[in-house]
Length: 220
Ligand code: GLN
Image 1 (cartoon, rainbow, N blue to C red):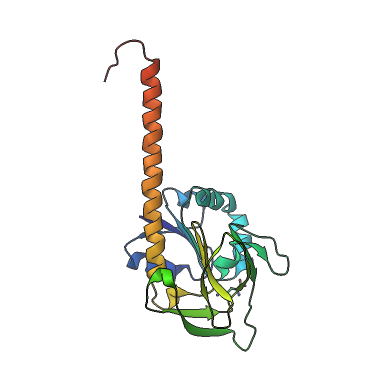
Image 2 (cartoon, rainbow, N blue to C red):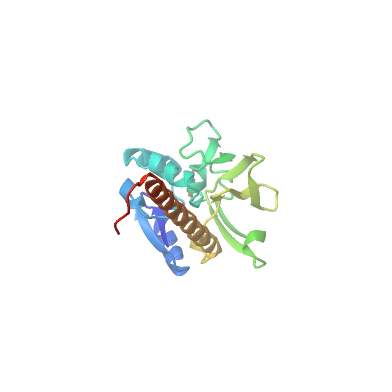
């Protein structure tokens, strides 16, 4: 199962390794053509302002939005979450406004610049998720269609899902946590089956239409 990892900047290598560990076939995405044949995409952590610029420079914005529109899973971590939000505190222009959330960048300030904690995430089973936060964003507002997957003890939201789009404030790929990648790989597989089935159905429809229009006997 081919899954793209946006590889312009940031912690993409760790996602590549995590996807490989769960049996998926990671593809580093730097140009639109690298998206051919992928059934999902991971947007890594890093620096969202730099990522925004590079996404624009390499013409990746619309192709990634198009992939998301097919229902392929999109998974953003940290900076990847920021670029998925439809509102960024401070008024920065959204990049891929696929999530009805408002994010605040660097929400933990200097004291808590980086920290680790264990989170309970029901969708991933009983064992807690060891979460590494690095100059992490927080979700300040989540729209009614957004499922909250996890909060830190003070109640702030750090993991969400809206349909095929999953975003988390922290870095599972840095702590050997592969359950998110497993989930993404499963969703990618379902997407492949769905779109494969859709293509086959379209081909059948086209054949039926041809058959209907055919007066004479068919060769082949
Ligand atoms: N602070 C970064 C930003 O605002 C995100 C940090 C990260 O991805 N680890 O883009």
